[in-house]
Image (cartoon, rainbow, N blue to C red; front, side):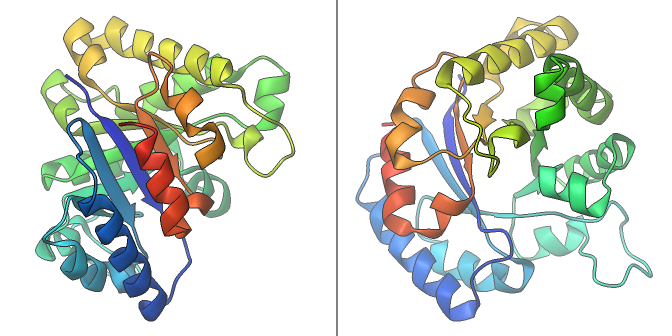
Length: 253
């Protein structure tokens, strides 16, 4: 049975001291909770992964990377390989985030390569996708999301899906002044689960966690997470505040 997942993407925030302070606060908060069906994940910057991993090692807080390169090694200045991530004990990586797609030109084809490489190195993939405002207003949102999912991960065998987490990002509802309702989130999540069911069958579809990445905050987390097909969140800004992130975790308990 699938679990709730509350994943905090720290993005390009927090120096070493800020990262240590934040993870220490989060570990203390999480250690005070009974997490029977909830996973907690944080994704610091590359330079802080080792330190955060060390401080979180005796807690229920898991640590993930924000990205990785598809090649095993080579002349790719500034890049990080899957083997480098696993060598420091990481077990998960975020791929396909809307910012990687928009600002760094990551395509579905490239992401399919990255997903394959990650899984070959026993990394769980938190696979992100979602439509922009123009897609939503033109009512192409379901078509766009279906294309991103099919092109990025439907090349996988069903057995690989035990290491896949899906994360839907309505890019149009992040920093645009537009608001996505819990009902809109549920509609898209149900559509996504239906796509997976059509391709892989009911067992895979019912067991994959689908996270919502549309500006989840303590004030709206409970209502969003109460929807049948929403299995937690990929949290941005609120993940940088320990009390806010803790409150969002509580919304799954």
